[in-house]
Length: 317
Ligand SMILES: NC(=O)c1ccc[n+]([C@@H]2O[C@H](COP(=O)([O-])OP(=O)(O)OC[C@H]3O[C@@H](n4cnc5c(N)ncnc54)[C@H](OP(=O)(O)O)[C@@H]3O)[C@@H](O)[C@H]2O)c1
Image (tube, rainbow, N blue to C red):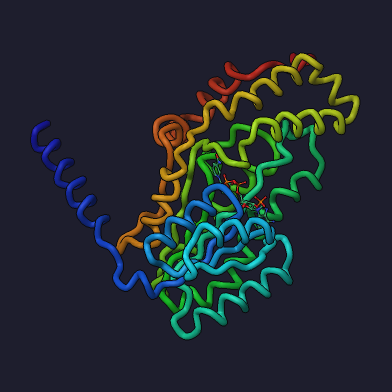
């Protein structure tokens, strides 16, 4: 009986492997628009797809980022300035994309732009702090998607949303995890709706990677600034010792980050080029072996694990 089971499992994985290796044809004619290409995953993906011969349309937040990317890529790759928090900027970028893709439509839209700050325990923050992240990671992503979806539908193409394994398990306060849970929800409903039109939706759920988003100095500086801004009652509740250990943890995150960004960009590339992309890609060993399994554990057990690893506020009962 165990042997039959092992053979069946083996066959299933063999079949899946074979199915996932099928690549779509005419990649050289396909346009892919990526947001947040100044640095990190977006920048690496733009270069990777350009090398593979796809027609990359790269959204960059700054002219400097755009210039640097163009200097490292072929003449095929074009850039546009895009701030996903600004409706006018999105509308202008959408028109720019439309002018380029014409009747072919847009094969791929990769919603990658994101920020992680301000992040701190929820009570240290204001609504504005939450909005700073939600405006980019969630509402910006939704507006970009709605603006470009007609072009993606025309090409019966792909939508690739970069979420995070923090969209499966919420391990810290602030808008980041909230935004990524939101992107998961948006992508799940879109995937079901768009399947009627031949559009495939994939989510990329990376663990921790070394990019601007996880920069040690930024995280430490940000924690101290938010602490100073928090009201005195909250400061008394948490105490200076809590702040010291919080800053230490924030400073140590970078050490746990993988420098191998290809683990993420290869998933994005697969989602764009495979005939049968996955609905979800978990990228990075920490995501696969730790955070994702953690997300399936009973809530009480996860809470205990998190408590065991966090410092206690001064006035904790
Ligand atoms: N690094 C990780 O560990 C990790 C893990 C899970 C998920 N992610 C997700 O991966 C995505 C890419 O992040 P990354 O790690 O590659 O960090 P990154 O290097 O900081 O890249 C983020 C990109 O988004 C751009 N951006 C920021 N605000 C923007 C705005 N308002 N409009 C348009 N673009 C904007 C940034 O431009 P500037 O460089 O000019 O600021 C940058 O190019 C994000 O969605 C992030 O949440 C990252």
